[in-house]
Image (cartoon, rainbow, N blue to C red):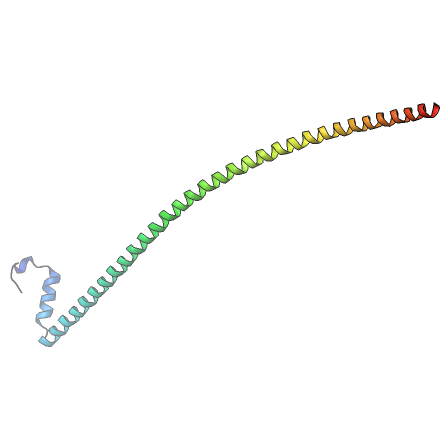
Length: 138
């Protein structure tokens, strides 16, 4: 161990640990180092696994962002199409209303013509009857 710092500067925990380790046998110290190495290896493996998970999640986030952008574009497209269809429906409703008005006017005119035709037919029949009476008298 390097003696960069004096013993007075060492923390109590460090001093305690140093004392405990100095009393251990070489075999115990080797076991401690091997355990620490194993823990460090597992920690590094966990870090690598987490980095892989983060990478996958970042790709998923990008995919979701792309999907969201496409969904927003589609939504705008659908809204525009819906607006066009609403305008078409309004135009068709106006055309239907105009057609219904025309039908009503035509029905009114038909009724007037029918009444006039009946009056004319009655007049013609009356004339024919009058002519028949005249011819019969003569």
